[in-house]
Image (cartoon, rainbow, N blue to C red; front, side):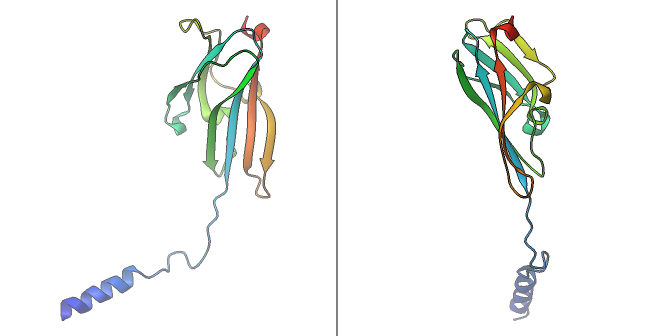
Length: 141
């Protein structure tokens, strides 16, 4: 009988809900989409390293044909509207037919190299921002 009373007491104490005092906690998050707009005459492939916060993973795009804009990464962070510097350590641009010598390297990645193409922020100041780099033949030469 004592064991049953102890079990009931333990269960009732562990099920009490007084650590949040009924408060709803809202954590705002921002997100970013990153596009590469290939306005060159070449088919391109990008190899990029994500920041340490994103696991320092190395990723590769599919072939980005001439005159195509391709989404290469989506990022979201609680309490921050991510910027390119928050998402990328390095980006290398290759001609699809030659993956041994990069045509262009962004290292480190600078926010100033990107253009904001759209921004949908809520009242909190957080939301979705789309960033784009336009690559042209003159930039790659």
